[in-house]
Length: 35
Image (cartoon, rainbow, N blue to C red; front, side, top):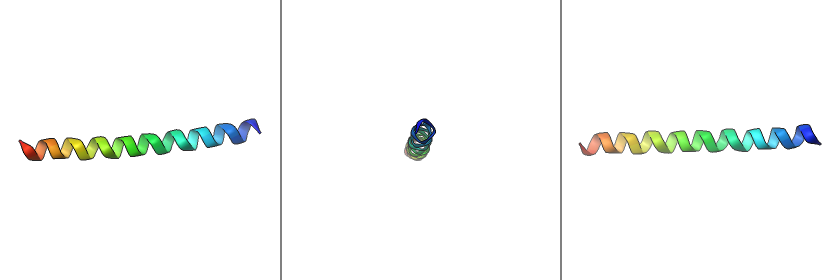
């Protein structure tokens, strides 16, 4: 049970990190394009 909870938490955390990183890259590229 505890291992399952940790597995779900790590999966959700890694998913959030990937989405945040992709969003950051997109915004950084947009700022570079404006200048």
